[in-house]
Each structure stands twice: as structure tokens, then as C-alpha cells.
Length: 277
Image (cartoon, rainbow, N blue to C red):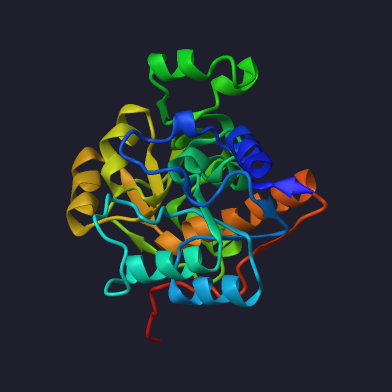
């Protein structure tokens, strides 16, 4: 028999909640830690599709990347999508857990996997953890892992890379990415920074860390302009594509930790964007 609190303990080992960004809403958001669980589903976002799949397949816990609720709410009613989803999940005794930025920044988290795909050397956090957070989690995290926990990742390329070559690499990594780039004058890239999701606001941090190029999920028009003004290349390839695959990685890790559980990445979740051809 596996209890929800055992799953929560393992999730906190994989992505310690203490390293989540201060503004984030992470951890167990709905549910009873002492409840027995048998089926766990991971997904990027709670939508009607993922809620319906969880109910139909009698899921006991959803591990979702994006928190719900994200901001405090005063009512849970079916008059809003957030309230409707929470009501449906709670009515079917489905717990909700979100690691969000803790999983982004973890030792084996999303940004680490992106950097490893491009076979970078000397991979390290783009923005290291604050010293008070390091002190708080030093007893929970192996010492050799502490230096690899932090916001984003930055690393050095192992061979001559151009922007075009890197874009080709993104197409190899992601099925149908939505590539956008700024008007950068950079021809060769030596150091690349990665921030999954909405990472356009990290242009200045990437430049300070010594990056020639920042790769992220999405950025605003003005963030593209800012990167250009900094002399930093900026490539986006979609919020969903930058993070969705990591929820399969997380489900695989949970399967390995709990062979008694049925754990899978949502089959019905799709990208919110639809690009016309």
C-alpha cells in the first residue's frame, strides 16, 4: 500500500520545494496526505481535457507542473474554470501536487535536461541559489548536487555552433517547435543559457552570466528588443514544447521509485497554441 505522503516525500527529494521561486505556489494543493493511492498522472497544465482523463481513469493524484490555484482565490465555484476544475477534482478525491519552479531548477530538472541535450560543458545554474536557501536545504540535498541547483542553466558549447545549427538542434529535440528569434548579429555561439517556460525576462541575467544566447519557451516583443540591445541572441520555441517532455521524465522517475503504482504522462493533453499552416 502506498500513501500519498510517501509520493510527496519522493517528489520533494526529486525537486525540493525549498528551491522554488518565492512567488510560486508549490506542493500539495488539493488532497489528504494520508490517503491511499494507486494511479498517478503527470501533466503540464490542469485543463478540462486533463481533468476528464483523470476522472475517467480513476486517478488518485495529478502531478501538474503549473499550479492550480496559482494565485489565492476566495471562492471555489463552477462559475470560473479554476473553480470548476478544483471542484471536479476534489469531488472525485483526486489530489493535486505541483513542483513547478522547483522542478525547473532541480538537479535533474527541466533546465538541466535542456542543457544536457545540447551536450554543453561546465553546466551550472544561470542564477545560483541565494545563500539563505543553500543553508536551508544543505541537510536535505547532497553536497555535490547543491552547486547544480538554481534558476536556469548555462554551459559552454563543445564545438563551433551557429544560430542556424542550434535551431536545427531544437527541431531534433522537439516535434514542431514554434521558433522565433531576435535580430541578433551573433554568428558563433560559445555559451548558451536555458530557461524553460516564460524566460524572456531573464535576458539581463543570461548576459551577466556570460551567455551569448538565451533559449527559452516564450518571450514578449519588448524582451526580444531588450536582448538585442544587450547584444544577446534570443530564441524561443514555445512554452508547451519547452516543458511538456519533462513531465514524462518525471513520470518515469516515479514509476521507478514506486513500481506498485500506475504512473503515466497525460495522453489527452495538447498545446494551447494552434499554428496555422
